[in-house]
Length: 375
Image (spheres, rainbow, N blue to C red):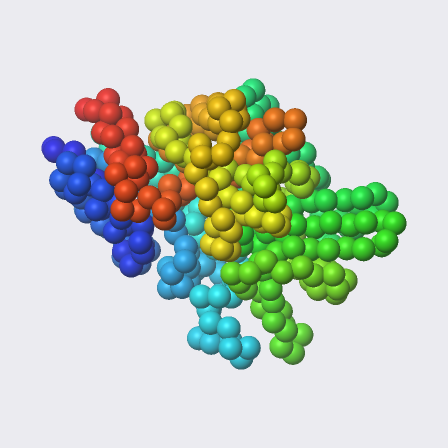
């Protein structure tokens, strides 16, 4: 069989279109596309595609409301209503993220059993490792003890609610990132600070919520706001904890001019292929929030770039069965590289979409090498 790719994802999204375009330009490699909608209707359909392909790339199971709804059903979740009275569309409201992730795990488990019957098929990301990367808490635990070229921020114990969390932190100056453990991007990320001398709490977040007859609907926005009202902070912290939280110390970032920054390091085939730094005057640096991007090599010293590269390659030596990932790394003021996220879908760089430097080309080349070993 000639090397043939199977791309599983949202056929309406930019990712598949861009990757397919790179396949055509790199070597006119044949490919098939299996939309999540079709796979979720009939998971067994994947066998038809595996009979005629030998390299599989899995794109993220999110964004599209109908796809999200289907994953909720596989997680035994309630159906989404048609439209909320607040005027927020379903695509904006974050429904039962923990149940959604249970659905993802159930579906991926079914897929994994099917893949097991196709020993000559190469998965660009190992299913088990992919699910660990998608879960911030599981990813942290997976990397714990393997620290060599990288460090992990100190994390807290698990809490049942806001009151238990505040009881723990109220006697000292506290700065934490409270993260939705199965959230993507900045979804459900709260940068929390407390000053006991002033008895002042703050949260920086792009999360917001509406309230109607006692019901709270949480949704993501494209703007980071600061909240100081106790009720709002309690509601937000409670929501993240109820839906599964991973809480880490908020570490100060290195600065460039007036901006703090961290760096997305893309590793493919155990080699660093690209680094893009994300700069912000606030604590949350995600690019979809209109923060500044800058190629790391344009402003960072060689020794800093080396630290980032070695740390990220060290992470991927732990996730040894997966071809690639985007690793978010924070360099501390004493030049320690801290891993703040591992993203199995961290390969879409909008600034490289039409560039010959697009990291998809590196993925394709490395996937072909690995597929050859399967023959």
